[in-house]
Image (tube, rainbow, N blue to C red; front, side, top):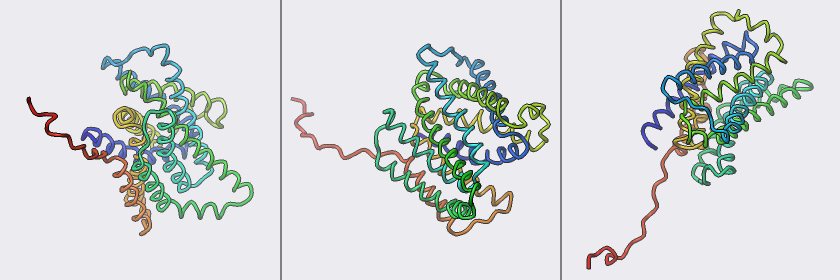
Length: 317
């Protein structure tokens, strides 16, 4: 893989591995959909402003309008509405296993279905290896949580798990749908358009149906929530989402999606460093397996052996 793409991939993993801090700070005091909707709307406006300043803003062609709308709906609105609702009802371990393991699988599945990529057994093996590592890292916590649930709580957790799973599927679908746009428009313009449209739709849903959303528009969130919001706008969306769009164009959905095997490791290490969370031997093994999976998926395929050619074919007569 080109060095430029490798550096972008590592930057994406680092950024999206730290966004959970901002999300946690915000959703503890702000209605989740409102928090997400305002974040994406602000990021979209900033991205489009930068695109205009760089001369990369252009009105989409008529045949691309529907694709822009579908990408926004799938990657932002449906994904984050389901993810944030689901995370209210499942523990972080269950959510991590479902969302992080299903995202690269969905990316590969839709890339093959929509013929954006060809089947690659090595990358399939990398996905299976990565899912195994995720299960080792977060599986014990998820199993303990499910074992303790009963009655109505168990049903809500099941519904929450289904919502988190659907978020991974819609995100993967939207990512693959977006790739043709990235061949015709600048990454920053696609990122800005989809985050703005998706964010506005999230805001509409929040204000119509989310308890406390209207009053929360007053902005009395507190310093921690506002700091998290600014971090998510500038790093999670403005920088991270643009990098992701660039990687979709340059290396494809399957390889770009392997950030899901590296970002959780960064999150776990930050939890240990910032909050004193413990890491067990099985966690270390799981993280090593996930890193191996990412390396396997990102490695370039070696060219096959060349056929021997008769020397006389190239000899001058």
